[in-house]
View 1 (cartoon, protein in one colour):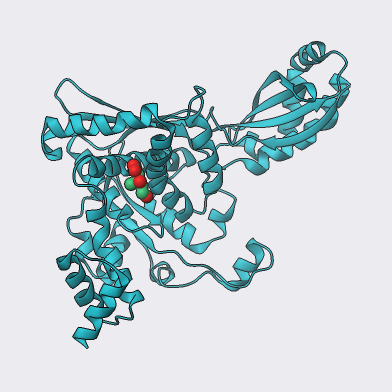
View 2: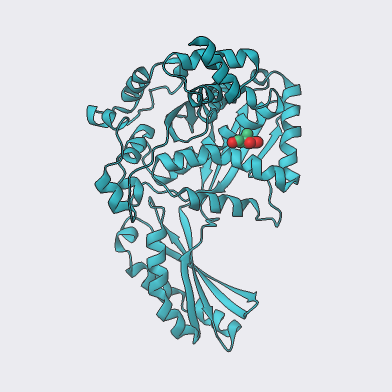
Length: 421
Ligand code: MEV
């Protein structure tokens, strides 16, 4: 486990050979030799075969490490599983700038998930809704009977809400069961409770229960992250202004907001995947939350403070777990959680949202200044060189030559490779 005295601020991490990088993580997170071996191993076929159906093999993604993160005064190294170049470097750079003003500060709600139970075919819908609310105590009792371990740890069903909805099929009720899922993502606990409540709700309402499933719009499980980005480090107050001009397009235009929020998810998903969490659930929740006013908009919010520095804030639902699910089966996900040194699901959620903010800041900063292609160039050029057939030190030679000539194209790479050989 990483301790408070260890710093995640590491200059030139990207320049080090892989072995040296692993040494640094080993020291930071107290990894043992077996854990170190996991970095270069594939998921065991037996485990894969138990995780999903019809298994043929495993599918690898690069696992990188974002450095420089400080969240609520604690230093973190963040494992990121992603196929996209520049993402890890951009997050690390943003975290370095945020550190100048103390890093990321976060707040979060209790880990409350919503389970939905849909009820149809009632003669008196309003009366049925009232009857449900009058039986709240009995409903919560039966729900909590389904998961005594969760209740023992301070979680469990906490509240009931009823909504009456007009649909093309007529009026229907959706009952919301609010469940504190503690350190779990919560899907299993919530779905089990909802299914167990169906007969009781049919009896109370005289209606027919159809859907019984959690909602991925986890808007009672919210994390907010905030950071102040130093104007001098950004290149002056005019750059802060340029940033705000770019950002404001995402506020008013869904076409831009989708891309802007995608940049946030570049960071979030990579840490969600590395810890074995459900990135589709997080994506669904994020985009639904971005539409909560009726117009799809930016998930992040930026403004200039009285010093002229740039303040960034990001708020979204974050349904992540550290117990149960794939994260407890997949050896590399377990390793990534150890690297993070997180102790609760809420701590993980706070780190994830801080990373989302860092990623978003980095993208909009690049877009407001030099553009993003410059940062993409080097790795992209190397990939094109490999596609052209370059091997060993030919890869760097071909890539560097293409960058120098400002032409990063497959035919160009093939031409240079021919000349070298
Ligand atoms: C690319 O993966 C993400 C960006 O498009 C995000 C953005 O435009 O803000 C660079």
